[in-house]
Every structure is written in structure tokens, then in C-alpha cells.
Length: 499
Image 1 (cartoon, rainbow, N blue to C red):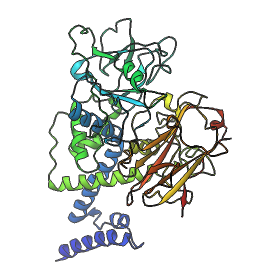
Image 2: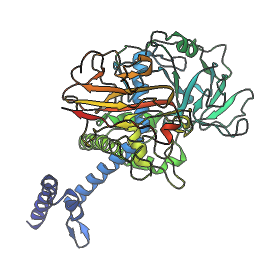
Image 3: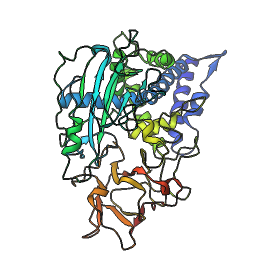
């Protein structure tokens, strides 16, 4: 009878903790921390509850740790389903990328090509990069891949083209698996990936949205093949991905752990990951073994994934406080998505929350994306809220003003993204963005007003349509940022709600 009463008390205590949170009373943490102990031991009911809690917590943290890989694997599997699989398949968004491509924060104002290599199945891979190409090479944890040792006096990471080791002249890159132990042949730019998977990400710029052939032709000169097998390699394929409905988003429910199981089963076991792989092993995700959670575990995993996904959004939509540069301006709401640096590393630790915030809403990183140099790289001020700090809502009308002489040597653009998926808002317009090449209407003083809302603000206004009932966020991209951006003599307005 006493044991029964204890079990009832534990159940009531846990239930009260869960229910009380909503009313500001005792929390679920109180219920866990006060799990009854008998003779120094938890009760049988308490042990069961604590183990469930531990399983849930490990699952949440594993999802957050693996988020860059989940993001990448979602892109890989979605792309391969739509366009085919193989080192020779390089989809190109030849007519730009619109909202039919569901992927986190794509840029509709450049030409994209995205491919996925498998150094485990295919071995070392050669990428012949044509002159004039701009791109990034990341591993499947979305870390910039670095040269094997120094190349021409320095170590290069991630960037291909003008900011990379070929310096825009083109060259042959040799991608080595993490466990490669052979002799590295000469005549290549050797780079060693920390994962078997390699993300190939090319970007092409244009000056006229009606003339897109030039950057596409540059990308179509790319050649990818296994080392030493150029003659027998499969011919390159460059499918046009523009307008093709494709889901390249990462899972936000329990299926994320099935995807993570596929990733772990195929990937290199990096010695630096052993602790986190131990967390995964406790969930049942072990390289070489089938992942087969029971119904109870499956339910906990689903709750954990949905919790971790929401935590990512809570982190991404708020300024990062662990760094000094979480926002761009002291009197504005624009967030810095690369606080610290593009690799999210400090001298003695890694930036977990900034990394989580970034990969919740975006993919790919390289030093060139975050470098602080005039007219080099790009900057990405981002806001989720209006001037009053309220989240942007598709049913409201807003305006943002860009003062004259926008500090972008190449071009600028403003894009809107779905708050839940981070893909472009599918608003019925050709693209969910406005850019320099669109020749937006300017005010008499040279400034530019951009409007967001469900209905047009009137003829001759620069307008991006939003969807009532759906939140969204805004990214201002500045390619080739100039000095006024860095010294903050130029600042965009906040997004102001209109009546």
C-alpha cells in the first residue's frame, strides 16, 4: 500500500510540475529535482521517470549538436530524390531560385549550383574549377574544408574562386577523405574533408536579371570525377532546378533521428565526436547497428525533436549575448548571423548557440562570408522583429528605409523568409526578394523604401507580399560591403509597422 501511495505521489508531482509551469507555479524542474528518495535511492517509479527524462534530454542535445548535419542531409536527400544521385550530378538553378525550392534562406538574387560528393563510396575526388567561378566547399557538418597543410604559403579553408587558393583563375581541387593515408599526387590543390560527405556550393552573379546565361555557362564547365578515373568517369549532368518543387528542409519531428541514424551509419567516426556519439549510442544510434527504437522511445524522440527545433528558433530570433557583436547597431534590431566568425570558434571553446541559431535558418559557411574587409565577401543583417520588438506578422503592413548610397560595391538585396521553415515566402510573386538589379524606385533624396504586407501599398512602390497568419523574417544582403557599413555611418531603418 505504501509503495502504491508513493507511485501515485510521484505521478501527481510530475503532473503538477508540468501543469504548474503554465501558471507560473512549481515547474517541471522542481518535480524532477524533488523525485522521492527512499534510503538514499530513487523509487522504482522515480527511476523510470528519471531515465525517461535523461533519454529526452540526450535526444534534445543530440539534435542540437547534429543540426548542421541534419540541415545538410535534408538538402542532400531532397536534392537526390528530385534530380538524381552521384558525383556527376550538379543541379543548377539556371533561372534563379524561387519559393518552389524549399531550403533554408536561399538567395534568389544569384545563380546557385549545389552538389553532394561521397568520398567513402567514390574515394578521393577531383573538382576541376573553371576560371571566374565563386563557391564554397564544406564538409557535411558544414565546416569549411581546408587545404592539406599550406598551399602557396598559407592554409586556405572553404572558399573557392577569387577568395580561395585558385584566386579566380580556376584549378584542380583534390578532395581527400578523412581517413586517406596514401601519397598525395602533385598538380592539385589538396583539401582534406573531416567527413566523407562534401557539399559543393557554387554561386554566380549577374547584372541583368534577363541575362543569366553567363554565370550558368561558367558553372557548366565544372568537372568532377574520382582521382585517376577521369577517362572512365560518368559524364556531368547539370539539371535545371529552377521552378522544380523540391523539399530540401531538415526534419523537425522524430524522423530527424532516423535521418541522423543514416548519417552515422555511413559517415567517418571522427575521434573528436566520440562523446556526442556516446550520447547517440544511448539513444540507440550506433554505427554498424540497426536503429530500432520501441514505441515509448519513438514518442520521446518525437517530442525531443520538436522541442529542439523550437529551441533553435528561440535562439536564432534573439541577439546572441555570448559575443560582443550579436547585433549590428546599438539602436537597431538587425542581428549579426555570424557573431565572432564563420566557423563559430573561440580560442578555448566553440560557440554553440550562435552555431545553432545560424543552422536553424541557414546553410553553408566560409571565411569569405564573414570576413571584415572592405568590398570583400558579404554581410547579412537579419531581423525577425519590427522597431517595437514584435515578431513580424504576414497580416500587418511594414516599411523599411535604406538610406541613399547603400554600401554594397556589387549589389544589395532584401529577402523575406517563412518563420517556420526559413525557406522563401511563397507569396505568388516571381521571387521573394528585391535587389539592385530590379532597379527599385528611389525617393527624391536617394533613399529606398521597401514595403511588406498582404496588399500592395500602391503603384510605383517597392513591395514584397506577405501571407496573413504566417510570420516571416527579413535578410538584408550587402555584397562587397563598403566602408560606410563598417563604420556605421550608413544604417538601415528598423522594420516599422504601418497603421
